Structures are given as structure tokens and as C-alpha cells.
Length: 85
Image (cartoon, rainbow, N blue to C red; front, side, top):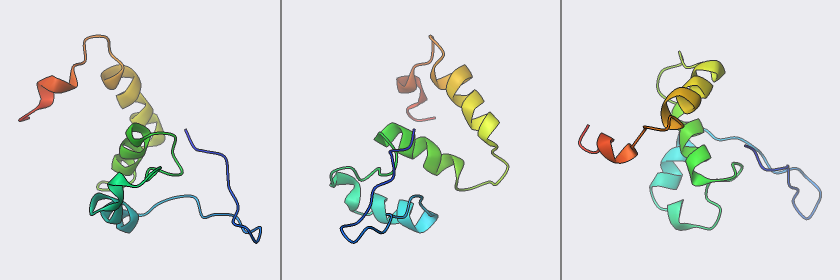
């Protein structure tokens, strides 16, 4: 899910991770920038992990995985049916 670490020209490692402030900044205007979802591989994974790491602190890694496996990846799941939820 995560991209491999990268380094700056001087050899320091780029910080990997995000905070609610980073999420807010991205949503306020950087969403159109190339690879705004770094360090994750896709916008979908970024959005899922942003959800998992904000709001309630009761979401465990196992519960996030269960959401993906049992809900999002279910053959009869249709995200269009959630419009106006």
C-alpha cells in the first residue's frame, strides 16, 4: 500500500505519513497535483487510510481490513447506491 521510501537530493529521507492538517491541505487545493496521495499508491488507498486515521480512534487495522474485505470488495457492493446516504 505504501510507496517505497524516497530521498531528497542531499540524501535525507522524505517524511512518510500524514496528519489531519495534511488531509485538509490536500482537500483545499492540492488534490489536482500529481501524486497528491503520496506516500500511498492511489487516491483510493489514501482516502481509506485518511478515514482510518482521523475521526474516532476506535478503528483498528483489523477493522479497516474487514471494511475493505467484507464491504468494499463484496461482489454486490455498489458505491452508487450510497449517494444521498
